[in-house]
Image 1 (cartoon, one colour):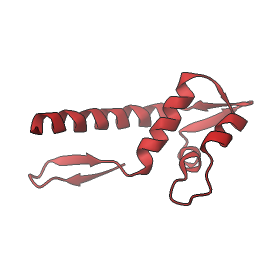
Image 2: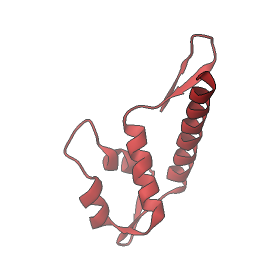
Image 3: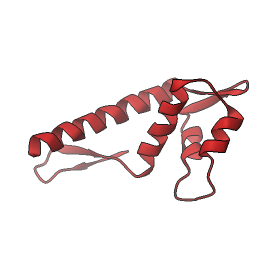
Image 4: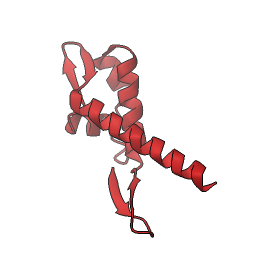
Length: 97
């Protein structure tokens, strides 16, 4: 996630293409306990442009605890910020309509 200045000088949040996918992974993991094998089967990719599992792991958003993968406090914080940014963008879009 990164920020840029809007034309009017205010800061506007912009998500890269990977952020929504990482959020999907984190939300999926929060719904029910998942084994490492299940997560890798569903989220590992060989596509260098969509390294969802790799990015989430490298950034400390997820960790393995025994056989299970869980969202870390860093991951929950990231998810909360991303949701806030999405909610703000949606409200701004509705207000502009």
